[in-house]
Length: 494
Ligand SMILES: Cc1cc2nc3c(=O)[nH]c(=O)nc-3n(C[C@H](O)[C@H](O)[C@H](O)COP(=O)(O)OP(=O)(O)OC[C@H]3O[C@@H](n4cnc5c(N)ncnc54)[C@H](O)[C@@H]3O)c2cc1C
Ligand SMILES: *[C@@H]1O[C@H](CO)[C@@H](O)[C@H](O)[C@H]1NC(C)=O
Ligand SMILES: *[C@@H]1O[C@H](CO)[C@@H](O)[C@H](O)[C@H]1NC(C)=O
Image (cartoon, rainbow, N blue to C red):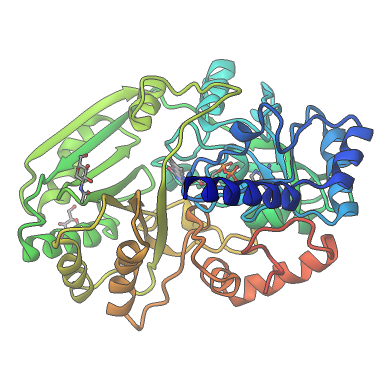
């Protein structure tokens, strides 16, 4: 038995290597002196490892460009050899699309592109396509006490995060990460290096902000920055397991928070928060207020908690900017290594965007949600429900003319995340119970929580909607008719 399975494994390995290696592309890259790692090289396995170990793919080549020219040559080599291409920035795609989303693609791993340069007169930062969020935040702070709105996890990369949205507790105030982009250097499918802004190559600029993975490799981002606030206030309310034990308290608490979130006499752009709940019956609400702790406590907190079940713990505290970012990161430092990043998880996650126009979630939906999560779960999971909408939200002041990004009308965005899932059913079940409880509501999904279980058609409908998608599909034919930039849900995949 042991002998037979060794032979079988050997045969599999041989077939596998043959399926992955591509001699033509190897020769083309080597001929152009483009740095790359190939199957069997000493560093290949580590470079090929995505953040999400549940979905691992074997690229034909992993290019490590040091210049724009390397990226241009690599794209031409791939196109001539019929290989599909994806950029990898931080590698945090929930679907491992930056590993190609299938075996045998070319990955252009941007980790050598780590430049961060703040222009002191315009306050625009030029940032390389491989920079991680923690280093970005630290860099613009060190160079000019500046800040940018983006997510909280310092290991996430600029490349995926900024081109597919990018939410943090600064977003209701400053917009999502994508809104900070004022220019892009991009290599297109024909190997050209273009600069794209609102006035130059403007169709491409529009498409890259929402669907970069289908249109090119962004080598540099030009980002508008904000003056970092001296201090912000972080607040947290905890309910321990009390809401998991009491359906009425769960539903009434959420409904009050939802009403509060739309109450313009207390809520403006300066406040933001999200609810965290998990399979161990934890229920917390945490957020940020761009104002003092004293103001929060006197004018906001009383109305916030007026209609909720009594929290078991309340914390309100002021933080300076970098300590605040460290607090949000759940780590001791936001700086990340420039090479050899090696954090991973094994998970399945998906999202639900809840449109504000329909008024949010109903009591019926919340009761059904409670019925589902109050029973024991088969593996550990968490749900985060972030506030995107409400009075003054900078996220929702723009529309799809601004960028190819459709999530501009959500009140809430859910993230449903299962760790070491034995099947996808439990997490899919959370989506189902919410969506089926409100058949009249047009729920969508958030691009940065990309869900590999959707067909291309479902993904296009949920992430973009028909009108936006058809515009993108037309541009795809113009800029990338051979579909060089490809992952299973790319623009143009049917
Ligand atoms: C631990 C963790 C925490 C997170 N926290 C947040 C959060 O707080 N808020 C939030 O909004 N999201 C959050 N996310 C989701 C995150 O925003 C997305 O996973 C994001 O797309 C990851 O970006 P990346 O560059 O690391 O990913 P990658 O896997 O490198 O890339 C993702 C996609 O973008 C494409 N791409 C990457 N770089 C480029 C480029 N330069 N040019 C063209 N295409 C490119 C890739 O080809 C791929 O298709 C989190 C994810 C994780 C795993
Ligand atoms: C909005 O908040 C104010 C307090 O600031 C409160 O008096 C009022 O009742 C709230 N409105 C709703 C609909 O809850
Ligand atoms: C509860 O927490 C423990 C310890 O963190 C974890 O191992 C377990 O999977 C969690 N259970 C659920 C259902 O989330």
